[in-house]
Length: 187
Image 1 (tube, rainbow, N blue to C red):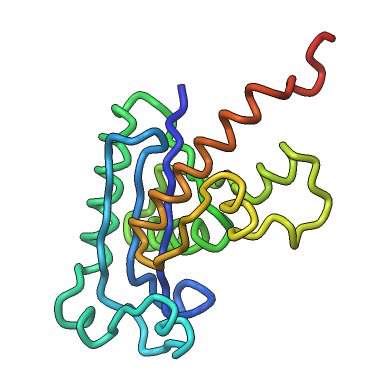
Image 2 (image 1 turned 120 degrees about the vertical axis):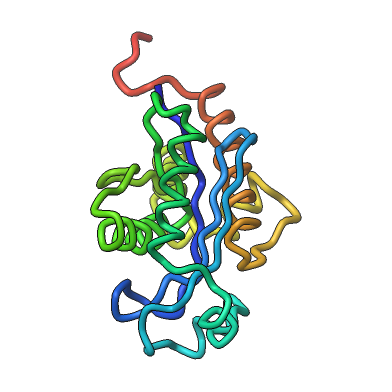
């Protein structure tokens, strides 16, 4: 059995290691469990534009943020509890490669283990496959949200965005299962 876990992150740059993962928000798709943490930066590098997007303050995080090793251990424990320890967690994100890249790097760097493994389910890709959309530009967050989460906009708070993308994915998955047969299914 699988448990879909919506994950969103805020960072201060484009790649992990050289730049820092500043916050993680996660929730189980379908509700019930939430996780949020803000972390101390691990590097002196940052891009002003990335900080402007998130609104997070590096000085405040340097003083009051959670140590990344402690934060990742707490996230690992949360994932296992949210999945009742016997179900497989599936990382779900909107532009999942970016969010997964940071989360995976931090898990491996600080814990030497990632409960999600080497995979992530990308909502944009799921949407393109489910709807037959051929233009990648038409799978942006705003376009998918317009159809499956109208009236909501990204806050760039990792937990709030994780909750929104969880609901968007839940609605998309429900719509797909009601109208499409799996490839190879009998007619």
